[in-house]
View (tube, one colour):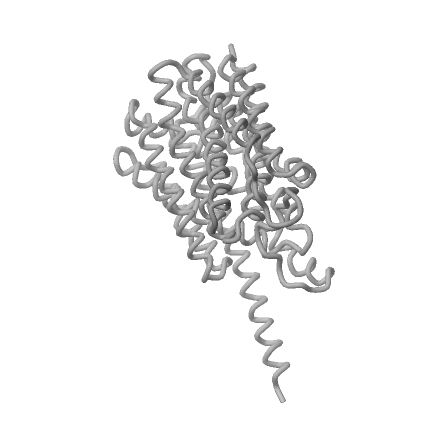
Length: 406
């Protein structure tokens, strides 16, 4: 990997980290915003859902914009727009304006993923390493969000957290507007289709018939997993503040989210040599009890349980991302990634309002029990994928044996 490629990874890693700092800041500051506005938990959860919906919904148009305009321009638009919207979030006088401005922030920062993935996929020769660093940067951004947002909220006000995000976004937009993002090819117009190798070439009808059911199951797992992600990421800070420490709950969120980066690395490394369909149910089976323990425990044990859940949840991310590439017919991998991001971040954003309703009715523990149900559904879908894959491998072995018989 040469210096130019390392510089590209540096730009994109910073952009990915800031994307997830922005994404998580509302959840981290939720308690302070709620105290300021005097809003019910179900409304706060609904606002998280609005933000998550717009954040995920941007993925599909962002893919088309990236193909047409190139990654660099889309990234500049994403962070320039986020800078403006973060200022408006910080100036919001009540919950309804907050919901509208957060929706705008979701739309702008949601442009990032197709453009960022495309830049790494076509600009780095060692693509696997580049995408691994990209994923870790996102997790580290999530881990840094509590420290940045809560530090500013304690020192100044919750609004200062969004003003800081606005400044960082504006700075990054200026840097990217002057940067050269090198790609391999004749143009800077990049495609998400380069993120993963397409499946084996077959006749179109055969490929579609063979891949449709597992692809739909994988999309379903993205939706269920997205619901878990949005619900957990929205209420984990509040849960830790209530059950561990009101003053240092955010720090423990950082500890838990750092485990997500470790999970990404280990999950990606294991996926190089193991069948993804076998990995997915095993990791999901470990995540379910960890999430249930997060609902049951308090104190230091809660920090351990939530960290374990975050580790297993993110360890499955490279697995399901790989499955999308494996099960998508040739020629439409880019669009399939757009659909998967919409499924996870868009439809999955319902987790915010579901968790908020559970907290409003009972307490934060109830939110994590509810999310455990959706995590169990991820496990069921993973087992179904495994069963289909095993059945097809048996059919292949039988066909091979018959074909080789004298």
